[in-house]
Image (cartoon, one colour):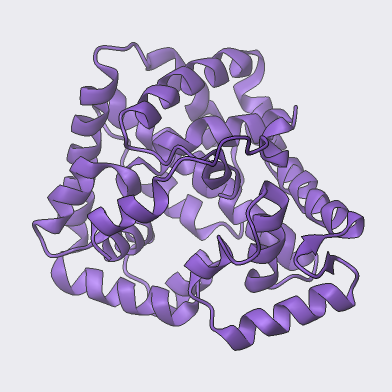
Amino acid sequence: MDYATAYEVFFQPAPAGTPTPAPMLSSSPARQLRDAVEPFGIHPAWSRLVNERLAAYGLNFLSGYVWGRAAPMGEPVAALVASAFAAFEPGLIAGLYEEGRSKLDRATLLRVQEEATVESLEAILGAVDVAPVVAALRRGVEAADGTGRPLFSGVRALPWPQAPLAQLWRACHALREHRGDSHIAAYTAAGFNPVEMNILTELWVGWPLGTFSATRAWGAEHTEQALTRLRADGLLDGATLTEAGRAARQAIEDRTDALEQAVVEAIGPDLPEVIARLNAWGARVTESGNFPPDPRKRAAG
């Protein structure tokens, strides 16, 4: 998939009248932080400029996304990368990872990704003072537990960048991956597999059944098995979450929030201002066309 196709697929606005996704109504500080860092932590995946720079080396939207997220972990075997990504069909991730590695070495990828991300954010934000926000976020990064969190631990192990906007991206990237790793731990501990979780999440944030989960490339057999189990357990009624289903999904969210509490506490009283500034800057990233405008896309992450 090239960037133009990805843009057509993922950058459609939500239909008029679409309700605010349930998780974005939460007053949880951990959830608010997660939503605020998202446009920056995942910026290389959505930025037109970053994708153009990686395309010059033969990477497309998908191979750039997978190799770009996996690279902080080093160059593990493909099965470990697929395991860390969790939500996606393993064969898809393994193939894209190997494809990306075959076209661009890790050191060059990390350099190009950082340089293009800084250039992209500079063009969008201009001269903004990000130092106070970075300092607060970095306290969260340093306080975070890396146990069982491979994507986060890989990002945190990278050398700290020098450019202020690179520091903003790095801190947001690390915290985004930390919550993602925590979320995987929470739902696997609750007994759900990735396909079941994709379905629960898409319905919870307000997408029709199959809209989001289909982008994770699991086959029809896996999807039918997941639907059968969710319905048998009383979590799904046809294509709609039951009250029990909503409660189960909320419980996973609550557990994920709890796993992020050390980050929230380390940022401390600066958190409301950090979230406010990130949200204001993030709105500019979205308005520039470098982050999907549909709030359900952010909420499902």
